[in-house]
Every structure is written in C-alpha cells, then in structure tokens.
Length: 166
Image 1 (cartoon, helix red, strand yellow):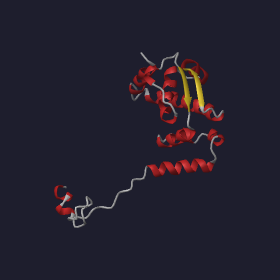
Image 2: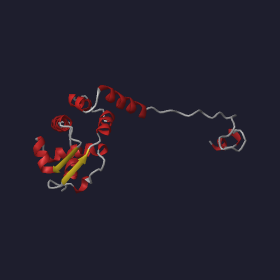
Image 3: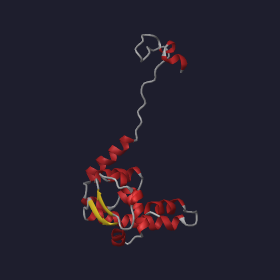
Image 4: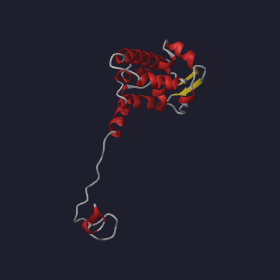
C-alpha cells in the first residue's frame, strides 16, 4: 500500500477515542517541520521521504500528511499516489502561498509561528492576511427589477423577456 493511501486510511479511520492522540501527533510533527523550514528559509526541500521523516522525527505516514497539506503551496505539486518511502521529493515552496493557505486552513498554530519573522515582515503578513480576507468577500451584483430593461439587450422589460420564466 502506498503512503498516501495509508495516510488517508489513518486520517479517515479516526474514532472519538483516537482522534485527540492522532491530532496531537500530527500537529506536533507538522509544527516541527514548518519551524525548521521557516527558520532555515528553505524554500526548496529535497530528499527521500524516509530520510526526511527521520530528520523531523515523525512517522513516514505523518510526513505524508505534511506532503498532502503543502501541495497547494508548492510550485510543482507531487503525484501523491506514487509516493513511497524511497521516493525522492523536491518541494519548491512559495512562502506567500504557504502563509495564505495557512490562513485559509485556519491553522493558527502554524501561521503564528515566530519563525515567520525571518521570512516576512509584519507588514507583509498583514498584506497577505488582507488579501485572504478579500478573497472571502462575496460581492453581489445589482438585482434586476422586474420593470428594468432586460440585460440581454432586447429592449424589452425584464418581466416580458428573460425574467418571464424566472
């Protein structure tokens, strides 16, 4: 069984009794990995999956969870289904995307790490946070009144044209 399949089975197989221990193991491992990456400003992480998992002191399946989570923050995503212990990976990390995606995931234990100070200034982090908030804002268009001209350009009132069947 591939590591990704093992990861999804582990993730989806959690029960009320096992979830807390699983989440503790995963979040502590993920935090340690990100602390090292950010502290060393490593925007390119390379190596064999088994070696990287050992380097960060996590099980390979937990490192696979990290790989799953960082996919949207790297420039060339990895084919996760083909990843095994011996797979050589190269993660070209886009730190701006990473910070944005941590905000999106509401992972406050990650986007508040002090190691971000060495990557972005406080102003830059605020700028990314503002961009994130804007991305969540929904702007509704002006509502078409039944007696307004139809937006299709026919010259008829909306109620007698496109709004007739609405």
